[in-house]
Amino acid sequence: MKAVVMAGGKGTRLQPYTAVFPKPLMPLGDMPVIELLLHQLRSAGVTEVILAVNHLHHLIRAFCGDGSRFGLKIDYSLEDSPLGTAGPLGAIIDQIDDNFIVTNGDLLTTLDIGRMVATHHETGADASVGLYEREIRIDFGLVETDEQMRLVGYREKPTYKHLVSMGLYVLKPSSVRPYLRPNVHLDMPDLVKILVAGQKHVQCYKQENCFWLDIGRPDDYAQAQKMFADERQLFLPE
Figure 1 (cartoon, rainbow, N blue to C red):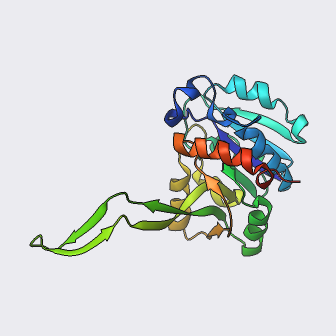
Figure 2: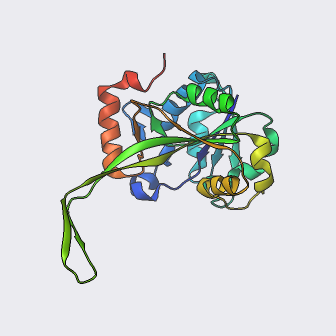
Figure 3: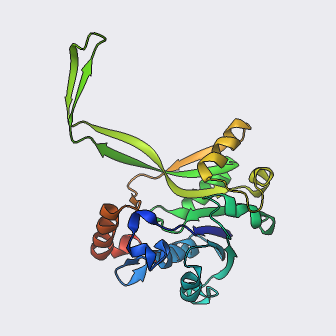
């Protein structure tokens, strides 16, 4: 099975660190995020990986090489300009003839990727989207008023739960190929919405007791470093 890893972003939210390192090479303890991801992909049955690179791509190439030390075959697709989280697929989709994984290069999760792939096959989906339930706490008291500005409700520091995309997908090539063009910018949410508008089957996948963090945010990155140090075994497959 093949996987495409989007590793070309500049990681602007983690500057100044990402002025020196591309975000996939940001360290978690003694290994960068992308090394952890490659181990997880191999455990899920992936044998070939295409890294879509741009920002500081020479550092990613130097670290990952041909993939042999990870038990993988790694190729590279270089963007001349940023193409979004789906646009790089336009240049490589003709190299893929079976269902494949697409993931952000900074993915940090304990989700069972192999189980998600199996569910994608079982449901016959054109695309599957990995979801995570995230809690958002409002640090203020929320006041509700009517049209005359009379108070009708008051909620002190409420917490909301939302399903968010993890940046992990499984795609059927024949279903997405018509919407992809080489060197044309496209983000994955837009591609998913195009599939839905075209009456394609987009399956959502959520795993209970799963952990996920967006390490593009400094606070989450700090939490990720601590959690990886404390519970390394949760992230690394056998």
